[in-house]
Amino acid sequence: MPRGDHRQRGEISICRPDLRQIRRPWLLRLSVHKMEVFREGLFEVREDGSGHLLTNRCERCGINFFPRRKKCIRCYRSDRLKDAVISRNGKLYTYATVYQGLPAFVTPYMIGYVDFEEEGLRVFAQLTGCTSDELEVGGEMELVFEEMSLREGEGKKVTYKFRPVPRKGRL
Amino acid sequence: MREVCVLGVGMSRFGKFPEKDLLELAVPAVWEAIKDSGVPAKKIQVAYCGNVMGKHCLGQRILVELGLTGIEIVNVENACSSGSTAFRGVWALIASGAYDIGLAFGAEQMSQKVEGAIQLDQEDLETGQGLIMPTLYAMKANRHMQRFGTTREQLALVSVKNHAHSCHNPRSQYQKTFTLEQVLHSAMIADPLTLYQCCPTGDGASAAILCAKDVAACYQSKPITIAASVLLSGRTNMEPSEMASSELTRRASQAAYDMAGIGPQDLDLLEVHDAFTIGEILHYENLGLCPPGEGGRLVESQQTWIGGRIPVNPSGGLLSKGHPLGATGIAQIAEIVWQLRGEAGGRQVENAKVGLAHCMGGGVGGVDGAACAIHILKR
Image (cartoon, rainbow over all chains, first blue to last red; front, side):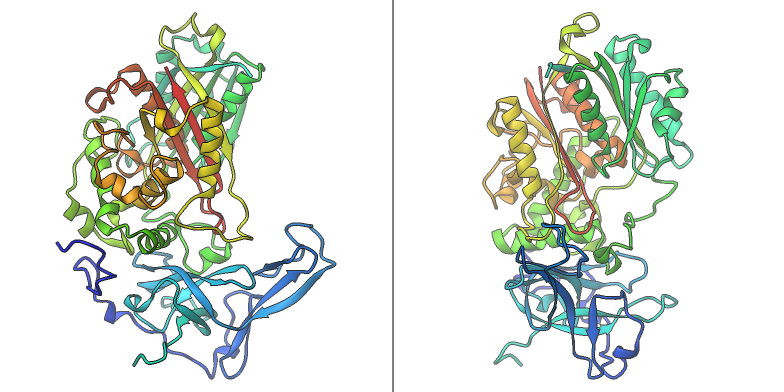
């Protein structure tokens, strides 16, 4: 049994299934904007598949909220709440690959938290577009909109996910 | 506030008993605590019942079987800390002078309801996208591994230790040892946490009789003093904090140490919330047993085994002893009481005088923790 952290050494442990067999959810750029959304009021997706997360900000207290709130959690008022969006890249704070999770989802699936430092927000979402060996804490992540990887009979819904931004110079 | 003691404790065997309902699980544990205390049952003035998944007014349903209703009875829920919350409720009423003698108990029947991981409330945004407890802790583990170099083997060692400890605990759900390889090769749940690194679901009950110290002498020659009782909730996630740490546990334990007038170096043993192996490692750091980032190396050094410098989870912890949600908090306290009295048999920590029980209830919208309860007991 090799010592040390398998992930850092790029080895695949014999106790995990072959990660290359994770089904990559295909990007449905042409039709995601027409699909039922996972939950209302969280994001907007355009015809070309791009979009943004819907946030708001209390100008009095200087705090941002995702999901949007009806009242600020600090001053408990709504008069200084301004709508905003996040459309740019964030940094991966941490992640995990789930083999036994919520029954509605196809496993394995990847989840993580992405940090938006300027807004002070940490967003939880599923991760996509890579194998778990390719994820790294601190890596730049971009927002994408994809069909949720739900099991047969659970319907079709679109949600926001994050995928690693390919680094310059990497193939 | 008056000093309060624990006079008696009781605990059922934890395990999967789908044929037993909550009453069959709880009544014997309550009766055991009453007999252990030396207090006549009719002298109990107040009772708190901790439970998560059961019926309304569970406390009354259980106590009616023992003919003990008529008194003040309160039912509490705080996820995994429900039992500790019940214990604290009784402590607070006695400490403040409202009553002299009280009963705290907790029970859970999960095997009739839950298979596999507990499914949290899917209306919660993060749960709806696939976040359940093992996945949350797996993310904490990955963060800790990345920041501090904690290894998969160090995580698994927590499970090896706690399963080994439980071989001496006849009330433990599991009572067998696992090797490091067996833990690492058990089914992967959420990378890096394998099956044996996640606590099981199960059924069970536990109970304690508390009494004001100034009347305890009538009933018992070996009262165990409650030196600290703290229950706090996590702050909102408006300002994201370090996930490889627990602001809540740090804050609660500091308050408990202050209340008891001691520091972590004065503890002889602990029962901590090891729902997942990474939890125990994080709590070594949060409770001040070692500096931040050193938790993995601490378990590897064997200092937290029975016989080591600071034994943690001599009962087998949640990982091996089991985690029937409402019953866990008081089961941890029962273990500390048995240890301090010298009644822990093959898992006895030598000359135990001061022990700490730490319980963390969570699972609410990504907040650090919903309810952290810390109790410090001494003889």
